[in-house]
Each structure stands twice: as C-alpha cells, then as structure tokens.
Length: 65
Image (cartoon, rainbow, N blue to C red; front, side, top):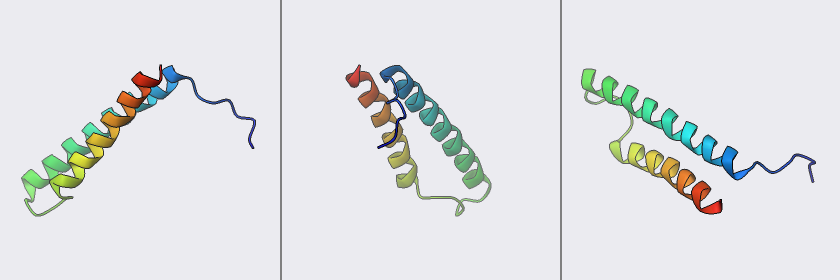
C-alpha cells in the first residue's frame, strides 16, 4: 500500500469540474473541426458519453461530501 493521502471530497469535486471543463473544450474543438469537415472527428455519441462521464464524476463528488 502507498502512503499517499486519500484526496479530500473538495479536491475530488474540483478535479471533476476541471475534467468537465476540459471535455467541453475538446467537444467544442471537435465540433468546429466537423463544421469545417463534416466527416472528420469522433461520432457525436462518443462526445455525449464523455460529457456524461464528467457529470457523473461531479455528482459522485457532491454526494460523497
């Protein structure tokens, strides 16, 4: 076992928020790319899944506190 401290609920919430912001930025970049080239980028369902993951991280962080 490692001696690293378990992150606090607040830090987990902050990590979830940062991840959510990163995912939104990535989704916007991909959307702009597809606007230039409609066949480029990932399928929309993949973006929805990634945003749902980020929202789940935030919700779990809130309920843990």
